[in-house]
Image (cartoon, rainbow, N blue to C red; front, side, top):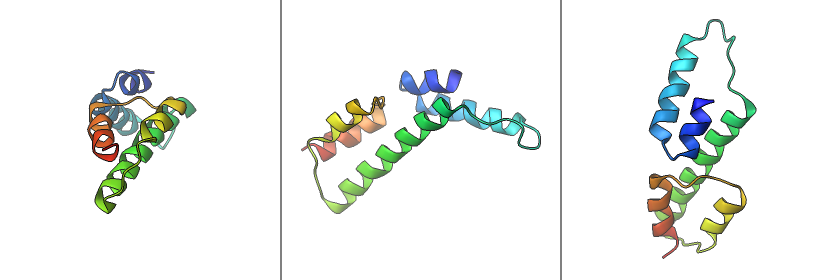
Length: 88
């Protein structure tokens, strides 16, 4: 699906746009994203929020990058920026 491909190629903005278009075109809730699509979005958002929380709390975690790799989470430019701040 285009959304998962967009996430895998670090185009979160494009993936979000595709998701919004798919939801707005569905009628009476007949369309549901695939499990792969849901997992990809949830993983991305989970780590994005977690890293922002670490930064706000002034915490670091040098092993965070490895955690993302172990869970096969694609590292977008936004996540890369957050990882750099947390890994210091």
